[in-house]
Image (tube, rainbow, N blue to C red; front, side, top):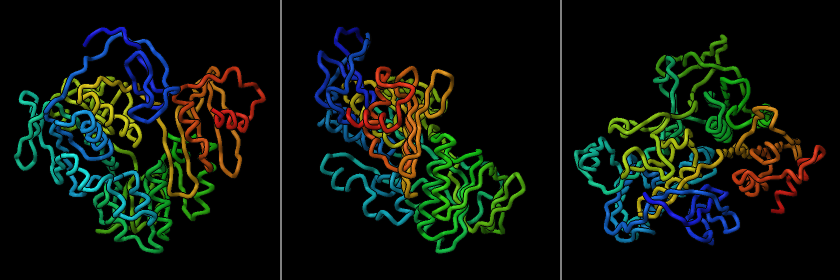
Length: 454
């Protein structure tokens, strides 16, 4: 580490930090332009170094791991890069699994890249390779088959796994989660027209799964434990709009629905709720959240909370080991979303390749697709105290809400039309100061027009 008098520039879109006298022409992480960078004050940064023919190992082949490999190869052309994937499938876009479930997407279109892409870039992709143990002293990864891989730098992108509530019946036949392509294949193998399906969980994955199976003509019921849908991503007003839309898709929603057991004799026949209701079901899909796959790192002695702890350079408590994506916890946040995972993969790749790059954190954002009424939320969507101001309307049979704090845009919720998505994302991530624009009479349409003009 060393002290520098160079200026530091933060990308207002993704949080990437750039060092130099001038802001870059484009952000290497999210392609933002020069004008999207702001000068900030910083004192200490790592020194650059040449990766040469270093050995890099990446554990995990989701978007975080593959983005790390792409960036490493760009900045370390002579290095040896190995990606370990537990799955036998070529790395694919998990983001589109529910679209595959809905029949909107073909399985052949899932891969992030072809197998030739990895060969052409001299990236050693090992499929069906499970990392069993880390040896920090020797800086090696021990695989399930006993093979050992040594590394100079290690990037861990092991992702997460579905959380299954500890209730009786989860081992019954036709109880599923949705995490990988094989899960989708199994569900499609049993769901037919008229199949009674219960989705436990009314978050993004639960609703996308419900929407997908409704498109397969299944009879779907969503069970949400909270008093309204998507409590982490919506406010009550937005939830009402979405729930009313789900009715038009013949998706039944039950709130205050805490499952205490899944019943059946070998195969599922229903879900029993704590308040005494029995929901008939031939198939149950559990979408009740996820947990980080941090056991490999925890067993090696690295610091873990919700995920493995990383600093602004995405380093774990071992200086040569980085963690990215769902498995990582940065500044108290485990993002568990596609875009941050991609950004983190790129940033860890740059750091491992010897290019000091900070991850400044980004406002959490969420998108809902598949159900026919898209939703986007970002930042703060519920007022915490009197310093927040909400401006909202129900234009175009949807919902728009802008959240301000002390005149700065800190959150937004859009349901229906998403043409404002890009300017809203940019404005919230930059905490756009709109004090001089806002009045007590300012309407959502005026705010939308203002943001569209930026």
